[in-house]
Image (cartoon, helix red, strand yellow):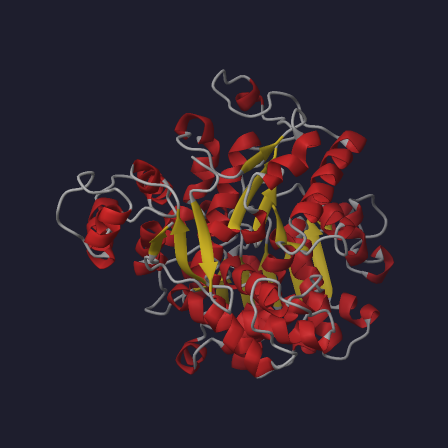
Amino acid sequence: MPENLYQFEYDEFGNTKAIKVTGRGMAVMANNFTSKGTSFSEAERRELHLSGLLPPAERSLQSQVQNSLSIFYNKASDIEKFIYVRSLYDRNATLAHALIAKDLEHLMPIIYTPTVGIACQKYSSMFRKANGLHFYPGNIDQAEEILLQYDTSDIRVAVVTDNQGILGIGDQGAGGIAICLGKLMLYTQGAGIAPWHCLPISLDVGTNNKQLLDDPDYLGWRHHRLEGDDYINFVQRFAKAFKKVCPNALCQWEDFSKQNAFAIRDAYLHDLISFNDDIQGTGAITLAAILTAMKIKKELLRDQIFLVHGAGAGGVGVAEQIEAALLAEGLNEKEARARIFALDSRGILTTDRRMEPYKVKFAKDHQSLPWLKNKEDNTLLNAVINEKITVLIGTSGQAGCFTEEVVKAAMANTDRPIILPLSNPTPYAEALPEDISRWTEGKALIATGSPFSPVNGVRIGQCNNVFIFPGVGLGILASGSREVLPSFFTAAARAVTDMVSPEDLEKGVLTPPVSELRKVCKQVAVQVGIRAMTDKVSGLCVFNKFQHDNDPSRLATIVEKMQWQPHYLPLIAQ
C-alpha cells in the first residue's frame, strides 16, 4: 500500500472532515479507512476509478449495517462473531464501528471481554491481517524508525502491552495484542477517537507459556521472557522512542504483570502522558460504584470500612483510588489507610510478612489486629466480622469465595452492605448477584465486573472500565494535559456517578447502562479536562486549533466536536 494513499483533512476541532485520496481503483477499496464497500457514490466511482469494480446499486451505510447485523447474529459462536467483526474492521473500519454502535450492549462482550480472551489464546491460528506494531529484541533498536513508519502526527492513543497479565488467563505471548485492538475499539466507541488515531502495540519480550513455546505455529518471539535489567532496558528503549516520535500521544499500559504494572506506571509518570487502566481505571470505576451507593445510602465515604479481596494490580488500584477519595474528603493518610483492608491468598496484608513492594502501603501492623492470633485466624470471614466491613470488593479471581456466611457477616455490619464481585470473566466472579440478593433479602447494593442478567427485574450495574478510560483519554487530549494525575481518576469516578439516573438510584443500580457509553465518556472527559486545568497541567492541544483557554464551557465544546462518528467521510480525489 503506498504511504501516500490518503491524507486526513481536519476541521478546527481536530475532527476528520474529509480524506484526500491519491490512490485509485483496488487500492482505495483495499484500505479499511477509505473503503466504503457498496456505498461509494457514482461520482466517487468515476473519480477513484472504481467503475466496474462494484455492482451498480449503491447501498447506504444504514443498509450495510442492517445486512451486517443479520450476518453477525447468525454466527454460531461468540468467537465466530469476534472473527466476523474483526474481519469487517479490516475491510471497512467505518462500517465495523457503525455496526458496533448499533448494538453496543450485545457487541461489547464480543469485541472485548470475555470473547477477546479466546482470541488472545488463538491469535496465531486465527491470524489474518497485520494490525498494530510488534516490538521484540530483534527490532527494538529500530523502535524509532518503526514508529516513524506510521503517520505519527495522527496517532493520539496507543495501548501497549507486554502480554503477561492477560485478563484471567495470564501470559499469552504475541496474542496479547488482541487486547490492545479491543481496547482501542472501545476508545473509538466511547470517546469518538477515530480508528486512524489509534495504535495497538505489543512489547513481545518472550513468553513463559510452555504451550505457546511448543506450538510450531506460534507467531511470537519464541524465547522465555526477558527479566531483570534486560526487561527494563527493553521497555526503556520503547518508551524513549515513543516519547520522541509521539510526544503528544497518550500511552495506556495494558495487562502487565502485577509488579511490572506498578513499576512501569510509576517510572513513566512524568516522562510520558501515560496511565495503567488495570490499576487506575479499575480503581476509578469501583470508586464510582461506591460513590453511587453512598448517594443511595445517604452516608459518607469516610464512615465506611473497606475490604479488597485480591491484592493484585486491580485490587491495589482500587485501594489506591479509595484512599485518594478519602483524602479528598478530609482524612489524612493514616486515617484513610486505617479504613482500607487488603487481603491476598495468605490473608490480610500484615507487616510481619514479606510481600511485593506495591502491596506494602496497605499492610496492617499485625499487633493492631487483636483477633489475629495465628495464621488460621487470617481469613476473609474473620476480617469481615472483626473489622466491621461495610464495603466488600472482590478482585481475587476466586469463584464463589463470597459465600453466604461472608455476605451475611457484612450484612450484620450495615443495613445495606456494598458487595462488588468484580473478577471476570463471569466464571471467576466471587459470588452471583442473585445469590447475594437472596442472602440479604434484596438489601445488598451490588455491582459486578462481568455482565449479569437482571435480578428480580432490576439491572445489575457493571463496574466496566470502559466507563473510565475512553473519557479520561479524551479529556487528556482535549485539555492538552502534559501528564496524567491521580486526581483525574477521582474526577472520572464522580462523573460516572453523576450519570446514574434517579430511576436507577431508586432501584439500587450503581453504574449507568452501557447504552449510555458515549454520554458517560463525554461527561468524564469534561471533568478530567477541568481537573487538568485546576491542577495546572493543561496546555496547548496540538490536535486542534480551537483552544479552551482554561474555560470549562469551551472545553466542553471541544470534547463534543473532537469526537468522530462512524459515518462515511467525503473522499477527495487528488
